[in-house]
Structure formats: C-alpha cells, structure tokens
Amino acid sequence: MFRAIINSARLSGAKQKALLRGQQARMLNVHEYISMDIMKGYGIATPTGQVVSSVDEAEHVYVNMLNKGDAVVKAQVLSGGRGLGTFKNGFKGGVHLATTLGDVKKFTESMLGQHLVTKQSGPAGIVCNKVLLVERLYMRREMYLSIMMDRTTQGPIIVASPVGGTSIEDVAASNPEKIFTEPIDIMEGLSEEAAAGIATKIGLEPGTATHAAGADMVKRLYKMMIATDATLVEINPLAETNDGRIVAADAKLNFDDNAEYRQKQIFAKRDYTQEDPREVEAHKYDLNYIGLSGNIGCMVNGAGLAMSTMDIIKLKGGDPANFLDVGGGATEEQVHKAFEILNADPKVKTILVNIFGGIMRCDVIAAGILSAAKQIGMKKPIVIRLQGTNVDEAQKLIQASGFRMIVVDELEEAATKAVAIANIVKQAEDVKIDVQVNNPTFLPL
Image (cartoon, rainbow, N blue to C red):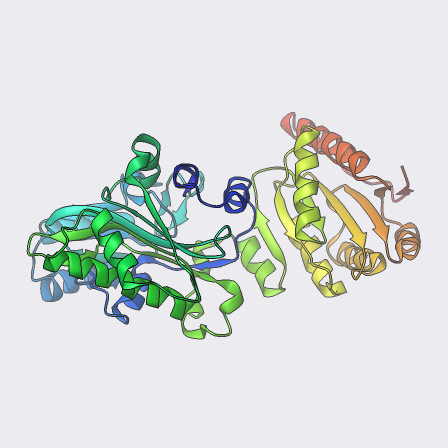
C-alpha cells in the first residue's frame, strides 16, 4: 500500500525491499469498524455509526441512531481501494453516500454477501459480510495521518500529509513535498513538540483549538499503538469538521502476530472469512505461508532460503505459487500439513522442496512428505533437493517408498527441473491432455 510513500518519504530500505518483494509481514488486519471501536477506547473521535449484517439492521441504525440524516454506507472487507471497487453482481463502489432510507436499503442489499473486487483483492474479490453505517461528516479539511514501524530508525515513524481523502500513493508521487515523516525514539516516546509539529504540518493553525485537538489526536494514536502492539495505524482521511472537531473518518489498524498472547481480545476479532483459506489452515499448524499467483509450489525451511528459492524460480522463467517456510524445528505433522496444502492447490503444477538440514533434519521432512503422500495420494510431480543433517537417511526413505520424486543435489538444477515440469503440465492441461506421474520410481537425477 505504501509503495509511493516508501520511495518519496525515504522510509527504510529494508522495509521497502521487503514490501516490494512481497516478503511476509506478520500482522493481524482488522475491519474498519473494529479499528474504530478500539480507537474509541483511547478517546479518539470517530463518526457516530454502527456495523450491520442485514438490511433490517441497517434500517434500524439509520432511523434510530443516525436520525434519518445523511449517512455513509461502507462495505467491510479487508482491502484498500473499496470506494473504486466493483462487486461481482455488478454494483460499483464499496463506499456510498445515502440521503434516504431507500438509499440505505439499496446499498446495503447490494453489498452484503457479495464479493468486492478492488485493486488489492485480486480478481476473486473478498466477500462482504458486514456493512458499516456512519454519519456523514461535513469536512472543512481532509488530512492524512499514519504511524508505522520503521526498521532504519528501529522504532515507530509518523507519516503525515495535509492532503487526505485520496490515494496517499498518488500524493507521494505527484507532491512528495507534502509527505512529512517524524521518527520516534521508542524509549523516549512521543514528545509534545513532535505532536504539535505534526499538527502544524498537516495544516492546522498553531494556537487554535483545532491545532490542539490535532496534536492531542496524534498523542492518543501513538499511545494506542504502543499499548495494542499495532504495527500500523492509518487514518485517511483525518477530518477537520465545519464545527472544529478533529475526527478519524476512516481507520486501518494492523497488529503484530507475535503479540497475540498479550492482545487476546483484539486477536479474537480476527475475521478468517477475509483471508486466504490456505493461509488460515497453515496458521493453525504454525506454518509461515503466503499464497502467490504462480504454479510452482515451494516448501522450504528458513525465510531467507525460501526467498532465495522463489528468486531462482523466477530467474529460471517460472513463477512461485507460494511462500512456505516450515521453520527450523518443524515436526513430521507440520511437514505433512504443508505438503497437503500444496498438493490441494489447483494452481500448483509441481512442488519444489528445498531443505538445508541443520536443526531441521532431512529425514523428518522426507517422512512428513511420504506420510502425506500415502494418505492423500501423490497428485503433483515433486522435485526435491535435500542437503545437510541426515540427508542419506532421507534419500533411503524416499527410495524405499515407491513414490516417484526427482531428487537433485543443487538448487539451480532443482529450480530448472521444477520450471520445466510445471510448463509441461500446464501445456498439457491447456490442450486438455491428462498428465500423470504414474511410474513409482525414485529418480536421483
């Protein structure tokens, strides 16, 4: 989301590289209405409103809470660009202004139960199970404010702009001078001077009540971020209303997965219907998995080795279907589940296993794969590269199993073969020819 901001605001090179390469970011993403509820707990002003799951509920909120005034109807899906998205039923836009009860009913009915396709969701879209109804704010000014973690400064950094309510990436590209950053020493915390400076930079006049409210908003957001282990706090737009209030008109919060044991109430609000079911299943077994768009399934131990494996697949002309790090201490059960997830993915045409055994023993990996193969069947061709601890034992297990696997010693050769096999399988499928690995022979190529 922050591609342009990262470049223009000169955020950390490590963060830029990780985000632009799609490296896994361990974080919980929650719906806007949940973000607003959390903010209210820290005294942060948000619009009056309520989340609903039916047209009848929407009517009740509009009549009784919003007093039949102008309202904004917002689809609750975990994706940016909702306003410009299109639902699978043809209804355009996930954010609409409603001026009548008829509008509220029509918009709510058009959104609920439908998949919203945005620039971030991919062509399948994301299902909308809830809709947020909030009061319409009459805004004098729209600003942008976020706090995120920055590796260069090893702490939080505030990103702010006097231009909000539109794509912040576009602002950073066209007017980078209007993007301001303020690193925060996490040991010292946010100072009064820094908070006041941010309020000034986003266009609030020093000495006014709105400037004081803006500085107070910055301080409350920082306090909330630290207290909740948030990795991102984003408000776009941050509104100055005609009556002088400073209100978070929209909200996005992410939280560090490693802090789940501290933030159980927040993590209990995780909406698994918004996530890739493969990632949800992998999470249950403590596997680091991210689904991608390619057709070569990858099973690797270690995040660095996983990234290298993905890179060499691309170098050889292929496209990885996932990032999957089973970790250095995976059990046979975890390996079994990892293989099961890859084997069940219809996009995967072949599986590349790349294991460098240190703490993670090669024979444990082999046993997990063979266990899964015996239970669910060997549906995908497998190229396997094993090096390190107990590699000889692993190869003996594979050879004695009767399953066909292409075993190689070097990663480059493994990637070359995986790409070639994936291409063969895809070409065969394109002309509706069934290709099967049906010769149960160990192939140490």
